Length: 251
Image (cartoon, rainbow, N blue to C red; front, side):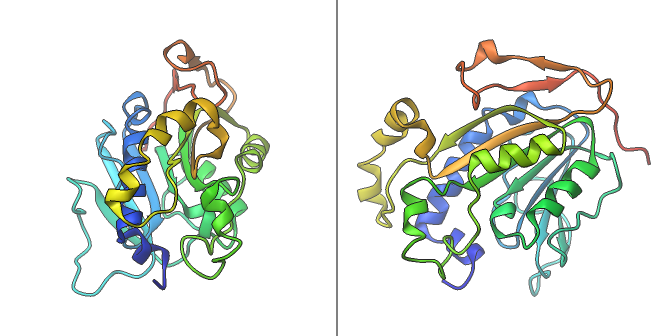
């Protein structure tokens, strides 16, 4: 394996992407608007299918693959856009309702700039979802021995650091969860024997999941946050909010 996108096509990578897609189904249907953007590395998987937002874009960091036309991706009507500058998002200010950063902070050369860009393109009350590798997990521990190999060759910032960065940018954490507690086993049949760890991990060691999912809302003057936490666990990572005030892209 020479890149993260190649690793994502492996058996273990596909297992992780399936877990992330399942986790997003708990949050995406509650987040409304007109424009949704997923930003990920070229060759990875579209994860916005569960969103009811009408216009969805799959922004991929990298060059357009050979023999592939630009347009709708393989996942429904999600439009694919390829960009070469990882830390610049090609959308006008205050035009996007939902922005999903799928492991982009893990591999960004300037994660602070990427977060600022994400805030810039979001409307007031818009939502930012971040998927990232948790350094305090069995996968994070593997990084000590495989620093040069994907997916362990990224930065892997802690949840606490990401929360601090978001707070400085006036985002409010409104939901999230940890996921994928299974050990690093490439064999699918063997890995399924440890499926019980998913439920046990969420209950007994929730901060040791291999991947974190954070949902944050852009806070501007006049933004009202409606908290639906009664539908979720009383936990800092299990609350979902929906904006009461929205503004959309002006064409």
